[in-house]
Length: 215
Image 1 (spheres, helix red, strand yellow):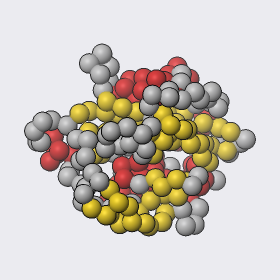
Image 2 (cartoon, rainbow, N blue to C red):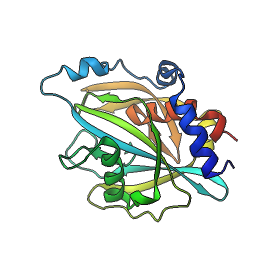
Image 3 (tube, rainbow, N blue to C red):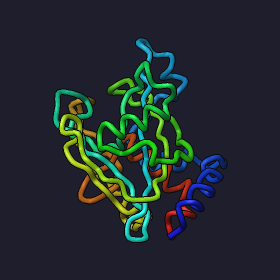
């Protein structure tokens, strides 16, 4: 396993290099999304938000965290996501938003996380959110406690899973939000269907950091 110090150093370099975001997203793209420029012209304006993709060591392997949202009357009910949420007026930056939300939702301590970069901002049409994923590293396994108001369950996984043959699959989902059935590509992680924006984030992360995480 690459050390936390080397992972942080090398990841900063790789996340700032030009890699094919289009290729990464095309692997999981289920429908054409408006561009960020198009989204910013919408009325009302989209809500700025952020999520945290945490990498942490466990049994000499790098792991990460997803959450299953609780069931509620909303477009993201029961969906799989990274910890995160909308930017509040008191957040000084979207990076702070990601860390604050991760602490509120699963008790990740912000001071234990070193942010090493971000992935592409994505537009979420059903909720009219613009989401920026931040990648952070912890040198130890966090003590995770879900907020029962927002988090139904916590899903942890070994990042090597992202490179497993057959990890990307296809299925048809009945989506009331879109008022139709939709054929989607998804990551099969711990018996969960991880698709949509979260799937795109996983695909981009796996491509950007392949040389570090697939070891």
